[in-house]
Length: 148
Image 1 (cartoon, one colour):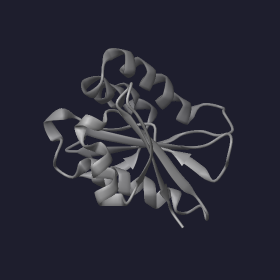
Image 2: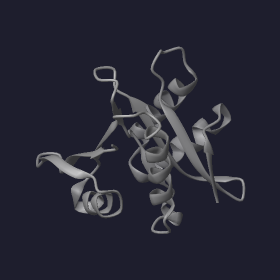
Image 3: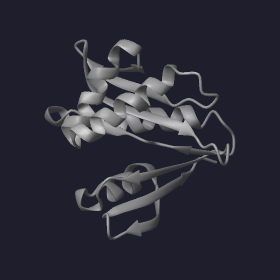
Image 4: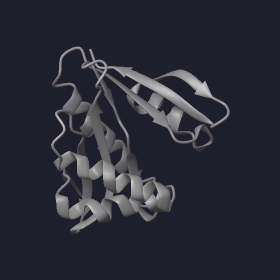
């Protein structure tokens, strides 16, 4: 398995992994977000894919905040269901952290999709993210990691 930057030709396959994990609505939204990596915005997201035997099996991305240039957000971490629980997501998140650490003073935030999936525990255990706030209505957690 290797992790590499997303190519334009990967967008639909990468977005399909979002659809497999969430829904078609999120897959459509992901296509738009993935395309922004190649757009004209001054602040563009960066996405990486995990590839095994020339097949995309996961993706992760990050973007710098428009409000505070020291804050970065992870909008997506997704692995195809057949390849979950094999450490792929952990390697993808580690890659993003490595990239963001190149910016001194950076902090990282993410919103977990559903705290019932033990994602907050995963992010805390492997990367030391801290829960900033829980949203009971949506069962989500806002988490942060200082990279100093």
